[in-house]
Image (cartoon, rainbow, N blue to C red; front, side, top):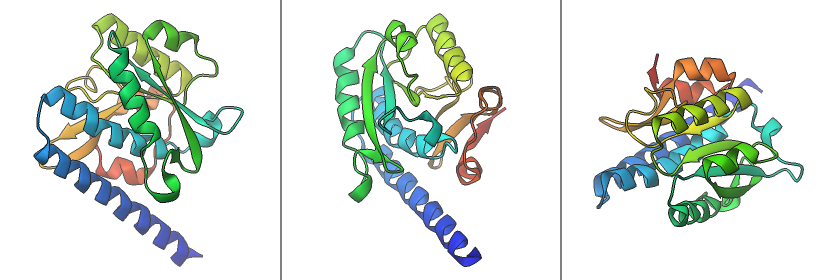
Amino acid sequence: MLMACRSTRQSLFWSFLLTLLVIFGEVNGAMGDPAEQRVQIGLRLFRTLVAADQDLEDKTDAEGRLELALLYQNDRNQAEMLAEALRESGHGNEQGKIKNHPLRTVPVDLDTLKRLQPVPAAIYLVQPLPKPDLASVIRYGVDHHRIVFSPFEGQVEQGVLAGLAIEVRVMPHINQTTLRQSGIRLKELLLKVAKIHE
């Protein structure tokens, strides 16, 4: 039993490491606008963060789906393209799923997000938001115990729960204070490879 548990942990670790290496390769090979690159790279890392939520089962809808909100400010077209990419992401049996839960991806603006019922399982920022709107989304995530992920530089330091850090390698970037306030329990394996902002 212990050996099987270790084997599963090792498998998860190598799978996660491989994901990071693929992402890192995309950083080095990507062309175009740096903010757009971060959005594309962050989308894959977002999947990993959502899968690392230990209470994910409690965040599915009545049909057992994971509703993921893609939050935009004024570019719905970009949000729709990313929503489609996220729905089609994953490999093998996990394509279009996270931990066997089918994905429902919804492009939303801030007003729509606040009216969504049930509350989405997690939120991905497609565009940078003005500071008051960003603060509102951070508060929404804390109050509803949901991951808010922003791929944009400097936003984890402003209170967003998760993002990405591009240093020698790409890694998850976690705001420890927001994580604690939100009551979200992320897997230790992810926290060990993440950059932590206190």
